[in-house]
Image 1 (cartoon, one colour):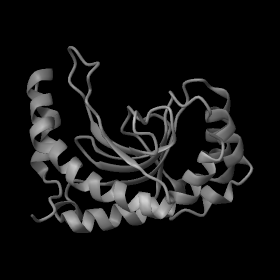
Image 2 (cartoon, rainbow, N blue to C red; image 1 turned 60 degrees about the vertical axis):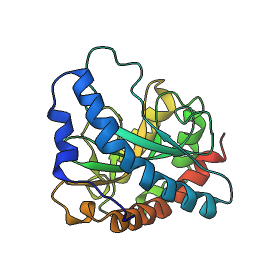
Image 3 (cartoon, rainbow, N blue to C red; image 1 turned 180 degrees about the vertical axis):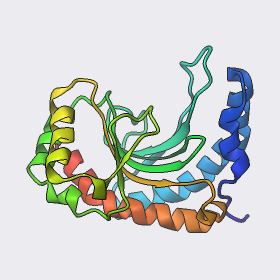
Image 4 (cartoon, helix red, strand yellow; image 1 turned 180 degrees about the horizontal axis):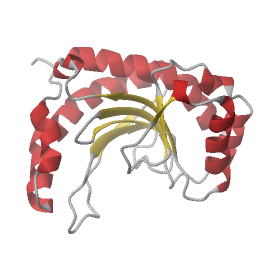
Length: 209
């Protein structure tokens, strides 16, 4: 079976009204692709890291009224869950696909991780210029790394260290019209290459867990 990517209709899922209708489309259109891509990527990361990495697909189980504005898969070393740990993500908003290394607000050791990043800022500054940084996984907005100077990046990490609900995500965005998305193998290769660039950051974060 050929590897499926994403098309405009997958991004259009987020224009559907109502929780039930949107969730049904997420489950039937998007999640099978997450499973196919995620099985490959989690296996690749397991080999690269030398330990088992597990695929988690967002269920949006807490939602009772409002439909989700995005959906994602996560890859983590913990079979039981990913939110409390440094992890990798791939997901969709209506206007872009995101590929992240993610630390979200549930992670209990964010302060230690942020401090380790502050002590080795070059690790982030040396990432490719097209990488983007987000400080909230629920919002679309992200800033290209080339648009941040060292002081601004330090401020982001100090916030991560000191603010309980702070988050930090770094990776790439791809727009829906990018032909890369339609080619499943090309998307896997691009995502794997992105994750490989993020591995030193992931490893440093895991040293603090």
